[in-house]
Image 1 (tube, helix red, strand yellow):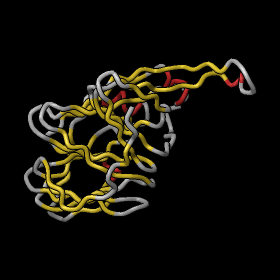
Image 2 (cartoon, rainbow, N blue to C red; image 1 turned 180 degrees about the vertical axis):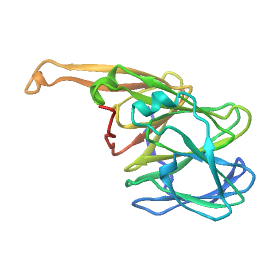
Image 3 (cartoon, rainbow, N blue to C red; image 1 turned 45 degrees about the horizontal axis):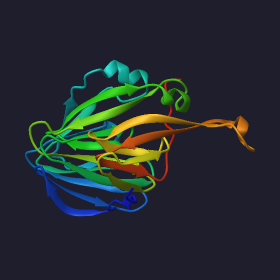
Length: 231
């Protein structure tokens, strides 16, 4: 199995899918976008600053009621240029861009998404099972991003630093459920339980892992923040 590799922690004047972007800062980095014809959408509370010429509107979100019941945002905000805009999440971490070529998809843990180009389609699914133990019985959501008609970018925030592993077909890795950030849609994920039955910690119960099977990329964050839930 290959070793996870640290993703780039900065970017300057990178251009893809009609947007030029910069990622700057260390402890709490900032995503700085130069917008022209391509709009971007984002969670409204991560907006840090903008040019006066940037127009802000609402991007419709299907299934909003399911999201608000779990403490997720009811709507997504969309910004259009021309102009410049900056985003930052309130937490120490690592911002990076995931470039999606037309036809590619990306799955991501809730609360990790920062922004995406308007060319990227967005949906989500609720996951139960192991999440019931981790999040007080409420489950959690996985966000799905697809570049259906054109190339696009999804900007991601990970806590601590983020490492990426590229799995070949059939290659596997076990990751603590709070440790993974994203995966290619080609990567399969299943929950694994390891029962502790002997030794000093015999009464501790189960260890829980998410097992990922390639081919494709998986992102791993070095710190996990337990978000509040509806309970």
